[in-house]
Amino acid sequence: MDCIQLLKKTYFERFIRKCFSFLNLRITIFIWRKLIPNSSNNFLQINKLNFNILYYLLYKNNFNSFQYYTKEKFNLFEKDIFKEYIIDSENSEKHFRWDNLKIIGPLESKFENENNTISILMKKNNKIKVDKSIIFPNHIYSSKNNFSNKFKNIIYFNSDLENIISDNNIIKVPYPKTISKTSSPMALQRIIFFLNKYVDFQSVSISGFNLYAGKYYDRVHYPSLIKQNEEKKLVAFSLIGHGILFNWRIINYYGNNFEYDDYLKSISKSSTNYLNKLYKSFW
Image 1: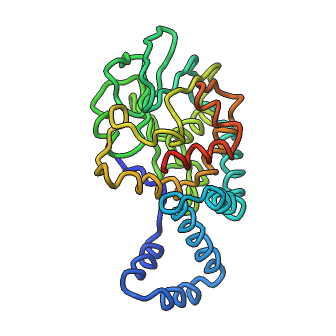
Image 2: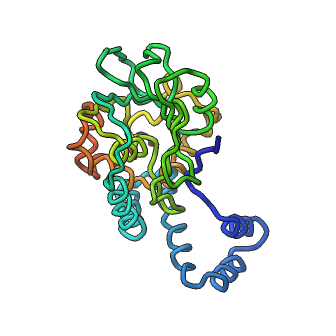
Image 3: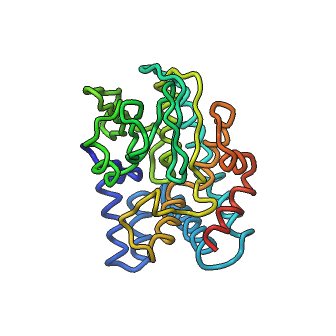
């Protein structure tokens, strides 16, 4: 099974990044401009924006600057990617018919086993009926913990696929066409993409997600292999790499298609409200 890789890099991009370890910044910039002159300015600009977002998110208490650079990144680099994501996800290829779906996030603590409801999980949970559940693993750690169970279906993205491949209860799904080094959909947003594009459904409810705008992790419901003293910084890097506003806009755009719980509903309407709650969760 291929490991889920959101920020897919070519060998050439990996080589350029390695140069930062051996050459000073000016030489690296010179090489980048000579080899890829058309993208050099974008490369420098997006890295500057990412640095500023990380700086204000973690090290300097200045919400207005954090909000400015976050919106600047979206307007400059992510707006077109967002449009591509919407177009791709709404280009329907209905392979499945699943009614009454409930997406259960890592912060959800109340579980009900309803006979007419199919649960979508990212991690195994002993309180959920296996035969009424679909596992949608987020990364290799989740996969190793979940793939040994006999769930109704197991779904994961594969970067080499063009069409869905189904083998018994394992469903391999092609990535959204917007996967790039600039931004890519996070776990919940990939589930939303999958449902919109490939599933004929009547109702979907979503609970247990806060998009890190609140308690940014909960080790009881969302175990991690990362050291606790490093987790805050790595979560910040992850949010920047995925695109904070890019992923918020996906949730906001599909607010009428799904039934959100109260917390997710409260942060999906206003980007300022969401960014403010997110910022406070790191300070």
